Image (tube, rainbow, N blue to C red; front, side, top):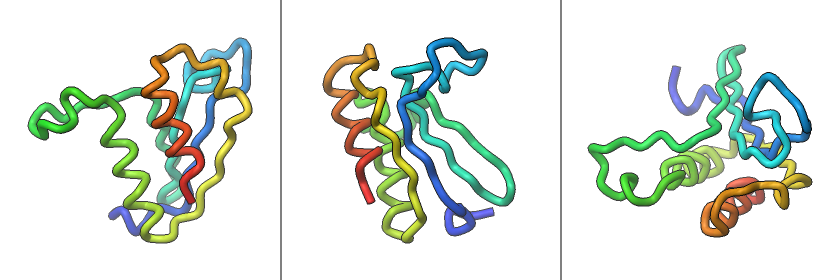
Length: 103
């Protein structure tokens, strides 16, 4: 599979008050990728320490990944209803909103 095989993505801030799945809890940002009949959920920063710009700027890789998918015209569903419930620094909140709103 390649990046071109991605069918759609969904960016949201969770909608449930209680959930067994962390990414579904209200205020938790998640980025879901649908590819080849599989669902992959990104819900935290995954730093590639070999790429220096990602070490100090968490979630930057997710924003760049999203930009790459949007350049390919991959459809995106976004839900920002519970964004005000997020408890991370405003800097990350702004990044998540950019990702969720990018078309």
